[in-house]
Image (cartoon, rainbow, N blue to C red; front, top):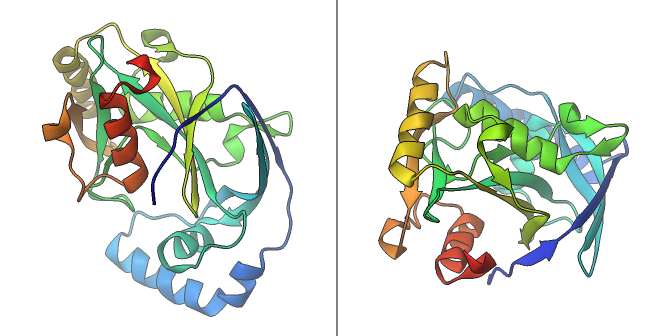
Length: 237
């Protein structure tokens, strides 16, 4: 599907525990798929994550209700389920950019669910991203950036709002975060931090300077589309 990018300035996301018919109907399949996933990747943990249950987009405002679900339910839906109305993985990514405008993407480690995939630091939100009953997507992006790369919020300049793109099961909020370091120095800074982590989520940093750096087989479709859009002048670089 063609991806479009929309600038969102206001996000209002609340949390509500409500039944999920998909998870109830697919309970046996979810258990079987989870056992298989755990056998392949023992480090997986069936914790609680937040999934969009309903959403509304008006001009530059995004409003949503998220429901808590088990990671096993989420993983089955994303890998095997048919699109289910508004139900989407609504996640924030740190659109890390070097001083000269290169995109800095993480290469996921072999112990993760998305081993070998290449995309910006970020992840599916959970209850640790909830502040005063509302989901803090900017805080989620900053937290994931620091956890995955070792970069503190003070080391990047975050642009206002998000670039939003969607497909039938994903809503990606990309927060442009610019570093003052050139790409190679920034990559070296991150790799040094990864070397000091016990079990880093990332195995490497992939730099995207031009079309030759795009890897369709390893980049999720939305991430590939964002990179193409960015290289064509999206967000005015």
